Image 1 (cartoon, one colour):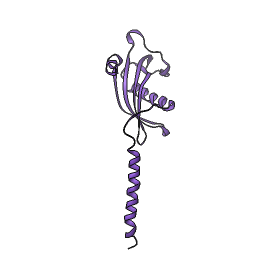
Image 2: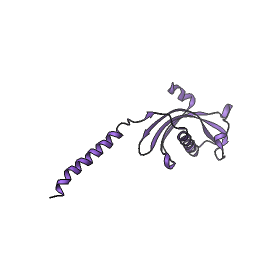
Image 3: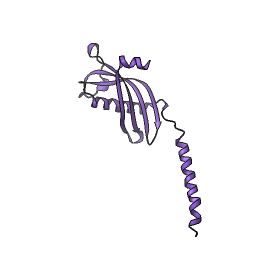
Image 4: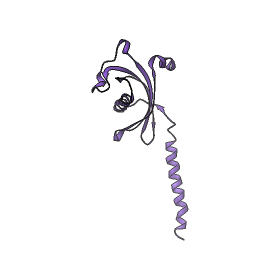
Length: 145
């Protein structure tokens, strides 16, 4: 009989704690325009361009030219939607140090605008590319404007 009288207040307490937690989480309404910290930006963009180069069939590596937009959302980690302009470099994909390679000029020049969804848990240095879409910069410029 003593156990039964504690069951209802305990269930009420659990319900209150859960509703308080859910109320806190619901304040995040999806992605928000927020600038990334320099440290998170560098590591996230480095991860992105490395993933892009590993998946690319291009002979040359690409590097980030400009961060156009970043949005973030807190989940079990941090999700970023980043829009970047990337350019083809003079370095082959296998070359090390491609982040400092000069961009191609003249007929091999190529720039892309990429929008990517990247999941990261920065405190354990974990990154995952969930989605990526790129268009040639000339075509994307019409869509962005």
